[in-house]
Amino acid sequence: MAFTNTVINKISNIVKVDSIQKYFSNKRNKTKLQKLIKEDAKQKRPSLFPGYRNSETRINIPKPKNIFGKKKWNEFTFFSYVSFSIKQQTFFAKRLSFLIRSGVPMLESMHVLKAQASGRSEAKVLDKIINDVANGQTLSSSLAKFRNVFGAFTINVIKAGEASGTLIQNLNYLADELKKRSMLRKKIKSALVYPVIITIATFGLTGFLTVYIFPKIMPIFQSMSVELPFTTRTLIWLSALIKNHGLLIFAVIVVLVVSFLLLKKFLPRVRYAYDGFILRLPIFGSIAKNYNLTNTMRTMGILLKSSMTLTEALLITADTTENVRYKAILAQTSIEVMKGRNMSQTIEKFKFLFPPMTTHLLTIGEKSGNMSNTFVYLSEYYEHEFDEQTKNLSSTIEPVLMIIMGIMVGFVAVSIITPIYELTGSISR
Image 1 (tube, rainbow, N blue to C red):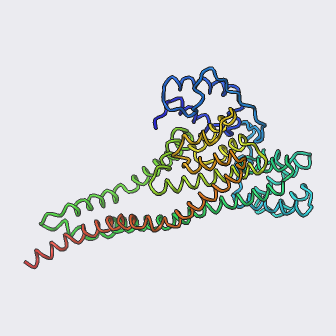
Image 2: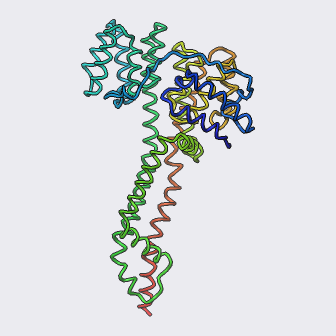
Image 3: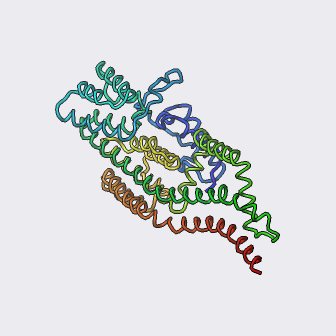
């Protein structure tokens, strides 16, 4: 699907800012967004924000509370570069929930967690939180100063628990969610271990035969009076190229990879195209889609159970989603919900990202008023699909890898054996 430049610019604005909520709360961005929508309507192309083509429609987005804290360039400190792993965040939520349930006050609980800190950076962060709590700040407002450490999802779940008086329950929700996210990532890594090992072994064996074994017998081939086969001549050329310019080739590959990673990180258009490309890959695209759907649906369910509104849950989920395609659609959906439209009607237009079953079940959840359980059920369904795909990944990819490995190793073997066979044949004659 082709998008206009205005659509790409909208996506770029969403991706560049630290928080999507900040983007929507900025008056200048609201005005700019209205102008972009008008320009996009004139192009008569698919819009990222369908429903806003009416130039007379005023986009009235309520200003959300600042739950993440503002960050200026002169405020970057040591804590700007500290990050907790999912495992550390899980332990933090689980231990804090246990201590508060046991009747330990918040301040004393934080002192206990600091005493159990596994590193200096973690202890420094907890020390700052202790000072904030001791000065009368809430836990969520203190955590908001360390968004790079805890993430928007953790901060908002805790904030909702403080507001509704269900902090212990929300901490348990948070710990379970973080644990499940960690398990999903481990499943992806374990599923990719076998293909990666086979790929490395294939290229390693081919490179060893080409660079070390073949040059030792190459003088014999060059002294032969017969014409060498095409495969042997190709292998001689590859061997000489790697031997003479191997370091240069390696350096070029490294520069290209690093350049791509930098472009993906700093250019939103590259990131947008890359995320879309991943979702369209055979086999891996379906796995990536189920992974994103699992996290998105579970996050929505947890946030709605934490007494958040649907609009707030959509904004926070969009802010915590890794894939830019899903991030943009969720941000758009939050605007549509603010205008009174149903979520199911909005995501129905993006069947590539949200399968029809998702739309049907959300429609039922909207009519029954039980959206949180609907999201939880969808997350369990997509997690089951994800598990099945990761379990069958090795058996699915194995034939392809074996064919590629056979072609590469077979090419080298034929290139070496064929001249030897022709040499022995000419000697016997």
